[in-house]
Length: 358
Image (cartoon, rainbow, N blue to C red; front, side, top):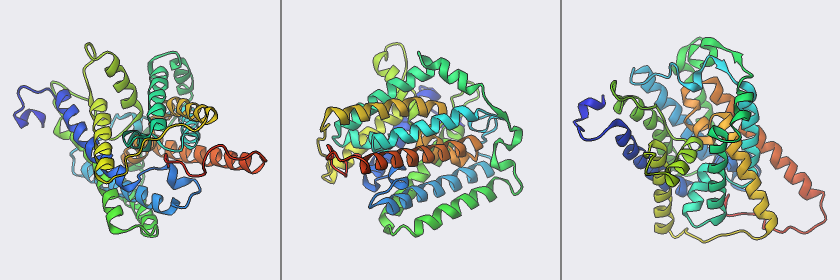
């Protein structure tokens, strides 16, 4: 469709940067206002139910919007990595558990930390930087052999790699997932404003797939079909920042830049911008360890809570569903470990119970 837009002086890649920038601006603004974060939805906390309602609403809308686009023939996930016939289950499970555990240690999933970093949280900014470095090292650097080794352990699924191949087809399974998510959202106690913002976030995930897979599609200059994600974009953006004269910006750089600007604008407009930093060396070590775990885990799992979760589950790929389950499991395990360690220690707490990174 891209060739019909009349953008003779713009390539699909250049247009994708601007498109991603717009998605990121809206996501950053809305995520800051709604407190969008999977970690807050799965570990114990006073706002767990409300956070789960926000995340579930976004997921329901993303699933329905994406699969309606597939049903309408606008996009197709045939051949996409999330519906690959060979499922690298060991890498996905290992990566998901690492990522989930890491986001508990850093008290925020990557998307939430991006938003908090733009809102003055220096802890979050450091975590995002380390996360990007380790993710890049896992993709293309010294940790790449580990990724390759774990990725070789797979199970052939064939067409069953997507729920759309099961009886009933994609719309039925999308409806089931959306119905369960909406039931959770309606019991969350959230107001209409919060759920409306979450619904728009879900629309952004669907819009990402349609925008890159249909609107910007060009037979002569194809680009990857992408949506909201933070693992690969963080690694790509890091490389772009340090070598922009030889590496052009892509969808990921536009997305992350937009998220930072959108979240900053929301925090300044609504008075939630606060400078925050570390309280102790022990806290710093905990956050750095969690950042490294998320960097490795996000790559192995094929995405973060947004890339494999919010945008990945709507593809109905088994890989995305497995990654999300592993992330939640890793988060619950680490939360239990920390709670048990705290309960068994007579030492006073060195950090406050509630952290701004929540």
